Each structure stands twice: as structure tokens, then as C-alpha cells.
Image (cartoon, rainbow, N blue to C red; front, side):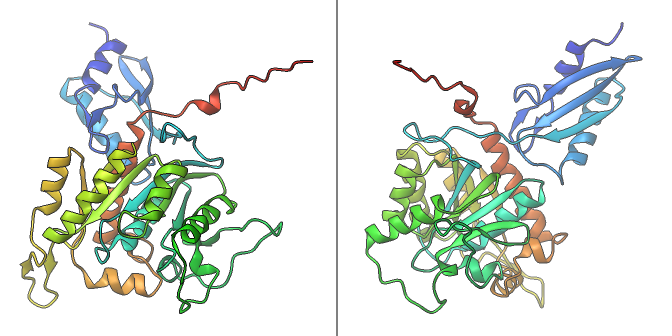
Amino acid sequence: MSLTENMVLESLKKLIDPNTDKNLVDTKSVKSIDIVDDKPNLKVCLGYPAKNFAETLNHMIIDRLSSDEIPCGTVEVTWKIESHSVQKSLQPMQNIKNVIAVASGKGGVGKSTTAVNLALALAGEGSNVGILDADIYGPSQPRMLGLSGQPDSQDGKSLEPMENYGLQAMSIGFLIDEETPMIWRGPMVTQALEQLLTDTQWRDLDYLIIDLPPGTGDVQLTLAQKIPVSGAVIVTTPQDIALLDARKGLKMFEKVEVPVLGIVENMSLHICSKCGNEESIFGEGGGSSLAEESKVDLLGKLPLDKSIREQTDAGKPSVAFEPSGRIAEIYGEIARKAAGKLAAQAKDYSAKFPKIVIDNN
């Protein structure tokens, strides 16, 4: 019996992409099947960046077909990042395909560290990424990214993003002295956030990561009402108090119709650097149980590791400083899963429709 395209598709339906939890056929990732000498030559295009996963997926596809006794020809894996739908009253921003908010219910859970490493991991997977530090009272991204000085302005009205490690970045910390306290009321803070976002000349971003301040106050409400967000990532620790506040943040995004892409459990396990003993200092299983009860994904667990703190304090985040290390590997997995979950959501097609202008003349 000669091999048919349908036989190849039926085989590929059994292959689940670990980053979307769906098969390649349902996500419409299989773009072409060219059968030559009874061997399929495949072109697969993913909806998320996968520079460090493409080879793995290539082997997964070959193994899947082989298990159904289909000898494979060539497999070409690429990716194309689309703009995804946002809150109903808003439209995606110009030059920014997707905005991903990184949030936590309370401070001290490693949200900013997660945000910067998530941004770096997405960039390392082959996408164009920016990060906006939305914590007006306590900006930390300038130090974490090892950036100092003030951004340029070519027209006197807008700001050019600062850059390091291949990331475009903007923060109120670039505009004030590091030790100057921001003694502002809520309206001034929200206005500052809007200006930092809209008055920055972001350059063709696939993803803009917004590092939110902890809590569910004015800044978060402004983000939900005025800024087009494609998805959110919740950062927590296994500790009951942190989980309680993370649950509030998760419900806030649900109420404003921003999909939660998943949960990151930080400081999940401490491994003693001297004896190797493993200890769950902040409890265990909290992130998993929150993900299960909220019906969202647990994107990954990060250990309580001294090197993560030391590297970000020195302006050398783990993903940039040790790109081949285990911590960077975990962040990479989290980034691919978050982007994969976003890729599986509805796309925004507003830019593809023609604009109708009625001329009364």
C-alpha cells in the first residue's frame, strides 16, 4: 500500500507537543507533507519560538512515524509568532505582538527575577523580546539587567528603550536616581506606567514582558483596563501565605478576562551546597495544588538557589550568565510552555481586515 498524506496525519495526531499539550495536527502546525519514494518530507511551523526545542521535536516526529512503520524523509521545524487576542475593549499595540504580564499576589517570591529570566529565555528561543518594569515604587530591572544611565530621545517626546543581553527594556529606574523614593499617589503611578509603555519606541517585539508590582492595586487595574494583555504568568512559592495571595492575583486576571498561561513555583526546593540534602523550606506541592484547583498549568518549579540571587544582584541574570546551566534550562522550559500556551489561544486578526473609510464627498 502506498503511503498517503492522511496516514501521516493520523500518525502525527498521536504526538503531543509538550509545550501546548496538543498534537501538531490540531494546532495546525503541519504546513506541508510531500511524499517522495514513499517517504514524507514534512514542514512544521510552530506558533512559539523553539530554537532550543526544534531538534528535539524533529526526533520526536521521526520516532512517532517510525512507530507506525512510516520511514521519514526530511523534517523542517520553524516557527512564526502571531499576535493573539486581548481584552474585548482593546486592540494589540503597534510594534508589540503580545504582552505577557508577570504577577504575584505578594512581594518577596522572586517575581522580578522570574520576569527577567523569562524574557531572556524567550529571546534565547529565537524571538524579539522587551521588558517593562511596571514597579514604579521599587524598580529593580535596571540593576538586574546591569543597565545604568538614561534612555535617549530622538524626537524629544518619546524614549528609546535601553538594551542589554538582547532585550529592549524600560523602567522608571532609568529616569530617576536609584536611591530616590517615589512619593506618588495612585493616579500619578498609573499615568507613569501608561507613559512608559506608550511613549517608548519599542521595535517589532514578539513579546513584551511586564514585571508588575506585587498585589492587586491601581497598577494592576490600569493594566487590566487600558493595556492590551495577551496572557499572564503567576509567580508564587509553596508557602501557604504566598499561595493565598497568588490565588487573589489569579482571580483578578480571570475577572478582567486575561487568560492565565500558568503558574511558576519559585523556591520550591533547597539543596544544601555542602551536603546535598534536599529540603522543602517553604512547604511542598503548593504550586501544583493551586494550578490543579484553578485549572491552569504549572509551568515549572525553580529551586531556592544562591546563584540565582547572586547573579541577578550583579546584573547578570542566570539565563544570560550561564545559558547552558540547569537553572537556564528550567527557565527555557517555562518560557516555551508559556509561549506554547499563548500560541494555542485565539489569534488577533484585526490587522488583516481592511479598514473601511466612508467618504461623504
